[in-house]
Length: 433
Image 1 (cartoon, one colour):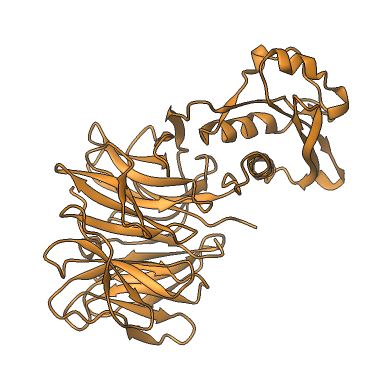
Image 2 (cartoon, rainbow, N blue to C red; image 1 turned 120 degrees about the vertical axis):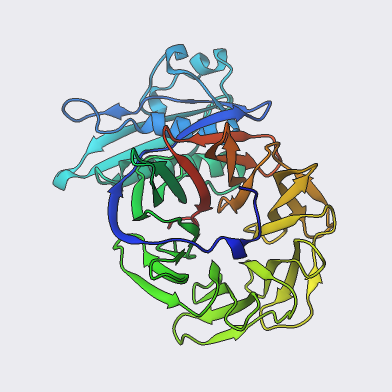
C-alpha cells in the first residue's frame, strides 16, 4: 500500500490482554567508517553456576548496533580482567583498542544482584567512569542497557537510548487466511516483546506518552473509529475520542496533558487539541476545503506541524498551538508527509517522494534543506530515538513489512526483522528514568 496521509489510516479493533510475541532481530547493514574500537570483557560472576545474564554481551551488542563503535570479538581478547586493577593495558594497546569495559555481577540478598562496571581509557591507562547498579533478575537486561547508555554518553557526549522501548504493529496471517494484528512493545534491541492489544482488524498510529507509561492509539472495535489511551504496564485503558467521522493520528503534547488529533466531526478533517483532564476540545486548523492530519508537537509545546493538501498536494505546515498564521515548511518535491519533530526541535523527519519512491527525509528547519536518508521504495512512519541519533521507520523488503533504522547523518543503517508476518507503524519511546 502506498503511504498516504493518515486520514486513510483509521481502521482497527482491540482485544485487551497480554499475548506472547516474537522478538525482532537487529542486523547492522551499514556502519560508520572509523568506528571507535572498544572491548567489552565478559563480566565476572561470583555466584553459583552460570551467571543469570551475560551483561557484557548485551552492552557490546548495544554499542555495536549504534554504528559508532567497533566491538572486539571475545575470541580475540588476550586477557579477561574483571576490575580496573586487573587490567594490563599493554594487552589492549596491542589489539588497537582505545577503550575498555570491565565489570562484575554479584548476587545480593533477597534474590537481587549488584552490577559493577568500569570504563577505561586504554592509552592513558585511566578510568573514565564507573558505577555500581543494583538489579533484580527481571531487570538485568535493562541494567545492561543502562550501562551501555553510560558508556555511550561518556564517549560521545550524547545520552544513550539503549534502555528504551519501541512500539510497533505486527500482522501474521493464519492458516484460515485471516490476519491477527497485534500492537507490541519491546526493548529497543527487540527483546522482551509483549503484545498489549490484538485483533483481527488493523491496528495503527501508536503514540507514546512523554512519561513512557501510556500509548494512545485508534480503535474501530465498535464499528467506528475511536481513540484510546492505554497504560502499558496494567493494560487499563480509556476511550478519549469517539466523535462522528474520523478520529485519528493521536500525538501527545510534551507535558502529557493534551492530545493533538485529526477529527472530521464537522465534515472536514482538521487538527484539534484535546485536554485529557477536562475533555475540552478546541480546533487548531479550520481549513474548509483541505485535509489536515498527522499532527506532531514541537518539543517546546508552542506549535504543531502537520500534513495538509491545502496547496494541492501533501506538504508539511506549522501552526501555533493557540491558532494563528499557518507557515508552509516543505517546498521540495510534490509529496512530503508524516512529520516528526526531532527531540531538539531543529529538524523534522518525514516521508518524501523521490522519483516515485517513498523515502525517509530529514528537514533542517533553520535552512529548509531536505536530505534523503534512505533508499527504499516504500519507507514510512518515521520516529526519532529519544536522543535524536537515529530514526526508526517501516519499510518493505520482498513484499514483507519490516522495520529499519537510520542515523540522522544517513551513515548507519539497520534492519529489524521478524521471522513471520509484517511489522509496521514503529514508535520509539522517550528516555526511561
